[in-house]
Length: 257
Image (cartoon, rainbow, N blue to C red; front, side, top):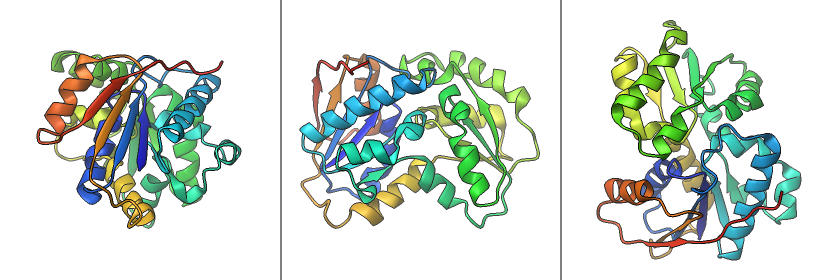
């Protein structure tokens, strides 16, 4: 079983990409809707939340893990994985597959992300290791607005605040928050057609296919665990997966501080 975790609805973009390449995998998805969004939280908070999420997924039977939250990528240290007996090939996070996707590319890159992701420098450092400099802009309010189901008008206003900072000499914009692709049409409206917008979920799903197949061949079941009930989450699941049968459970989730 593949366990996916995110602060809320953002990981659904990763689940959708994953389902396209591993349709018969059994998936357990944990959305920490109670503590969302993660993008403005401290490093210590993110580590505590990550530890609790990994523990939950393992207790519920997940053998392989996809961390579908860019903000926690910096928290996934080797020592943490060792504590849960998670081998590197059993976990996929967002940064590695994304950076590998652009290895050898001459495209001029930029990314939008949450403050936690930007401040960790995890993308900037990873791209420097393959000889690429990347421009990065934080959009503090956007993930929370998407999580709570704000209107398209509100979403557009938030994106336009960041747009004046966006240089025009770039070829590809990386949406380095899994919430952001949920409002991809709004990004296209604001940024125009000259900039290619890249969703890292594509690279993550391809990595999952290489690492988890063929052991992840099951019945294609999907179970959702939420730390707080969310009408917006339920609505998005139905919108993104109109034919999918699923189970949803709301549970108590109290990470140790």
